[in-house]
Length: 510
Image 1 (tube, rainbow, N blue to C red):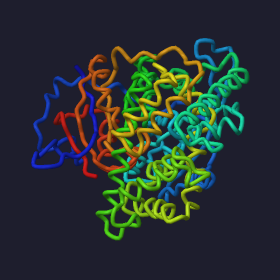
Image 2 (spheres, rainbow, N blue to C red):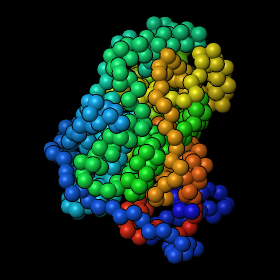
Image 3 (tube, one colour):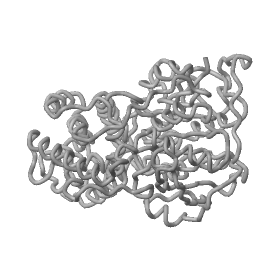
């Protein structure tokens, strides 16, 4: 079997835990036999290119992210077939963003990045350029491919303003506070939104799945005129890259899955995994604030967090809903470097809301909505849903999950109704084999997807003939690569021509 490399969290307690990755491929640990490691597929630089244009200032301003000095950001577009099985059936325009530094070699192999439907992929590339993982850019440019349907990639605009508001608030609109009223409001908005989007997009309403997103990435490969791609999927983008590997086989020259979601799991299972992991991320946020001294959340940060979410749930922070408050906090944590400064900044925002001034929290909620709840993102998520949950099941889930995950359980259960009445695309099968062993980067405190997907992927990878090697990072953040120099060095090694050897379990410091 080939070997995959998984980065998760650092070992704690008396157990010495996995070996620390320092960028030397596991120096000092028992090495595997190099003769047993298959050669890596050859990666090459593009032999043709796109019409890139400089867009550093505009892109940084758009996403309110400030990459380090010396970062070059360029933008381009690419026409991709709406239906990959019918190349002459019309196209849509996909947005691409290239990030590099002055040190990036001109002939370097690009790393193709997608964040799937989580966030705009361009923002994912900016996070890499902003955090400790920026060292990757000195050897390889990162090219982000926005998922089709997002505002810059064949923008989908098919919901009414009222439908959009009700879905973003998980039904907590117009005074709807109790569970039954919220379920009614959300399912009504979801069903009518489905009707409107189906009418507006017909016959392409089911052309926004992970398989279709994967086809856009292969359109880029063909435009570059190269045999293989180095793939980086962050969050739900890992599903896209696994779909690519399943459909296009040997075209995947390297596969990096960063804070992955649980590929192929039913909607209810994925929602519970998210509730569990995001609850953990918020608890870690509160703990780190308290440990830093002078925490804006006061003497009991968890209690302050709970009070703000509870107030929102009860309508005391109107017009902010529970869903919008959680999205504001988690997005703020996800889209800034994993640092004490970020923790304090987000804590100050939450503290102000607890004290009766939700202005900054409202601004953060508006930003989160623009990044995470566009019509195209909803359409994409609903295209990919498997095992839909009926509205009659939601009250029991809310009761059970609220006990297990006090901050996130009810919201995660309600979110299951956002695709009520929507059609779903044919299920994308997991790859039956992989041409190369993936690198799986993970943290157990991911504020967007929860960081529970990497463990769920183990069986999928084993069935594809690869055996995961665990390397742990206990940082708080959306992308392990963006936030860890250690992880970035391992990825740089993995992109080289020599297979990475070393221990089967590794760790990177937070």
